[in-house]
Length: 222
Length: 222
DNA sequence: TAGATTGTTAATCGATTAACAATC
DNA sequence: TAGATTGTTAATCGATTAACAATC
Image (cartoon, rainbow over all chains, first blue to last red; front, side):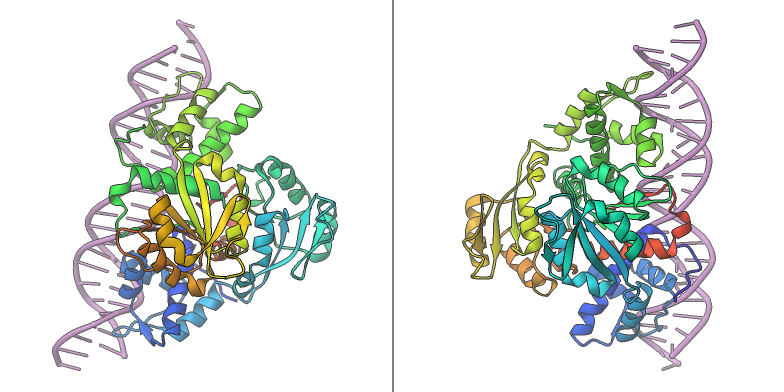
């Protein structure tokens, strides 16, 4: 298990997966080494940033040659915790909840979706792939049994606060929130907002207000 | 039409939708005024930030009372461009593409999804709600006819670069990219990454590395 | 060796927060 | 009026970028 000594800033944490994506892409085309300058160029950022970010994860490049792709890729896989599975419940078996439940790739990155929950009697008992849809009233019991690390909240905005309360009551401490709403939760619960509406609105603001500056800009929304 | 004099920073742009969410919530419970301190408290940020952010959109609060909710809500609706419809194509009629196509709320916020595209002959011709699935080969022609403002890319990572090339060739200048991959596009094309895998990875890094600091923290991922 | 690229320290830049006069 | 809250200027903080010695 990796021990992180220095605190890693959120901007850095957000960039780490991008480096991993690049290492994968380069690995596939059979390249052995890549420089921080190449990575920076692909991402539209500064090369010093790349070296600093990678350094803080505890990996070292080689002067003169750069970063060994296979080796650093393996390092990232360990550091990013792909083998350390996090169990999650999806709360809300609507279109988005089902789409996320069916998204196979999550597994490769350490996310194991174990079940779905809904309040619609017609949905309870259904199977999404191998994952069963349970009644929201069974959440507390199943959490006791399975001890999921997080709840992925994909219910309509109107119900999101009530459902968040149930999640908190069930003892789950992390909510990945897809509802376009500001949840009120106790201090020890982490809410990670993934508001696609806000994301779209921000994008369209960028388009209308900052158009002249967009060239060469690639925006990451994590 | 709103004219923006000062450039608005991306962190500010990302916070604007949150203020709107709060105004909506407060409006529903019938409150007339809200102070920047209350909003800041709900979002876990500083109240000066709230006042500065709102000021830059051209709205003014009232000393002693705060921000008039109905009025500022209307201001935000105009400023955030909800009535200025942006037409979009969804490229990739998989689970996620279909979920987004069925998401009614986008319309209220100015996003009009007009059609879907796929390369699977079994999907071409299907209707998702009122939206038809076209062949990816029809993209250029339909873009000439409809002039969509953006492409929402929801194909598997393996095909994302090829499909992005088609999107660029069709003349679309904005890509909202849900594929977990770094796209290469010409300088005049904006890529807005919405990589849910990277988002999950960042979240799990937060959980493992910064656990002690998470209290009271609410994270927005836009 | 010379040249390229690293890791790291110092400088810059910009965002956040503090302080406070202006205002209803 | 007094008190609360605003808008804004100044100070702080932290992230990004520049500079450069160390290294293979």
